[in-house]
Length: 557
Image 1 (cartoon, rainbow, N blue to C red):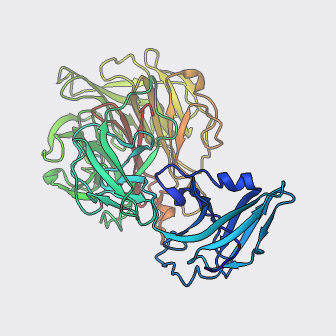
Image 2: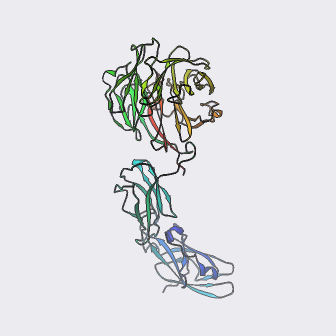
């Protein structure tokens, strides 16, 4: 038997014993005055720690089957036949023969003389071991947009989801060289019921069983969960959606599980509201025309409203479409002789209670308002509301949204240019009660939406760049539950009501090369709450730029 000194190399404890409890490091050696023994390959790579088999005089240096452990590079006996060893000793403790190189394929006898002169005999050898680490470190269902919450102590993976889940393939991260059965990367599994996944370490012996289960979470008592914003998609209108005409896509509506884009003179295109993928088109028939289907919006029930531009296209008309499978039906016709139709908003459900608003252009601070109660339109002729409190009023860029679908005295929000600000208006007096500071007049605010979500109230507003220079093209989401926070400047970042904002100049026409100027300065925003009340969706679009979807939640994590 060849006699040499013992030494060992530093190995990550997780590798040494993986899912098992690690042996106590060097328990008897420490008593003999050796604090640690390490071994490295002859080229200086690797560090592996020796352990002593309890009740014996054997010091074993575990060496990984692959090195580095993340690779597929096999460690051979030839590689461990000459390893550099080191020992960390207490004062006045010696080891013989002197440490230098050991052939760890063999038993190596060493003698340790401790501080009181006693000699301890040990046998040192190496063992090439397959890893016993068997952890499932990450679990995702990309097609469903879900990431599992892993609790290692209970070996459970929670999918925070409501409603039925489609069978899906998973993405998983395992310990190196471990396997999983059944393999969710290759088999579409149904996660509506609990699913057990067995992870087996490379050693083929050590296992862990993880239980994947769908859980209905608790809601936060108020509002959006901080940090929950998730980009669902960002699609280029031309390259991704296939809208080839420039300048004319100006309206966005949410109809159930779909987003409907209005392009003047074209059939409406509808997209999957979760992925942004184009699904199909709505045949508008006779309503299709450059000035006829000028703009679209939606009510909270997913009914689509389409309006023309008056008086350019004659009397002002609003058509209703019952979702993506519906056909246009004339809802309102009003020959008011005023310019109207560049923007249209509705709060509520037109088959129940709703308030429809359309800014009257170039006439100060006036808008048309229609009231629907119990599914019945009060009159084809709207009330013409004159509000006050803005400095300049608006010309051709304005959007108005009420906070209630049934109370005409409820407050409403106005996004407009030339004041280029967002105003909160007292619906009982028609006077601005609060107004944010104006932002740069080089750019345009002309789309706003309001929604209630999880005991909070939110407004979203846009900022559009109609030039090929400068930087704007932003969208903000504001918590307007308390009027005290409705102050400051959006562009300067001094409005405390802002809970989220897009990055500057990222989704507009200027973000796409070659740049096609958004000369009409158009864009749109829309908010929707999921049926279960756990998710808030924000959609927005910049003409000649992107259509974008973000998800927020109120899940108590």
